[in-house]
Length: 73
Picture 1 (cartoon, one colour):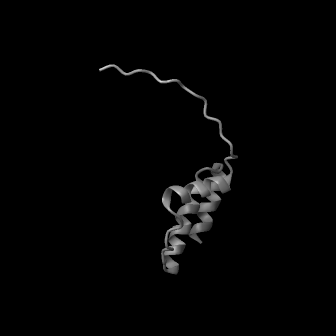
Picture 2: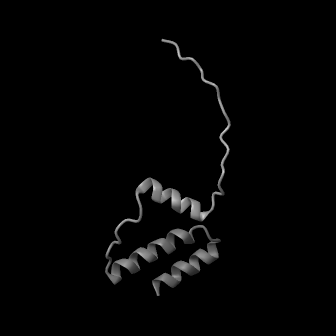
Picture 3: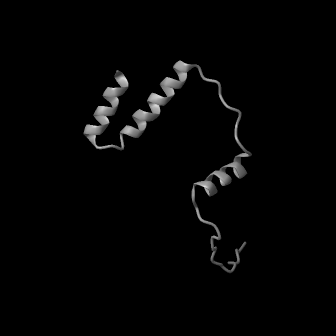
């Protein structure tokens, strides 16, 4: 069985890939906003602290240390 190559064509974007476009694409793929999860205040605080710690690793070491120290307070 042989495969015949097809002609290639250049794909040209007609939109700007900004945040609005990315969100619209997400909704188009995933079908809209999911139902909100109901978190307790303690769960929300734990999730927020985890996100802050994850983002802090991208800071310089001194700033990252200050952020993690502030989370312990």
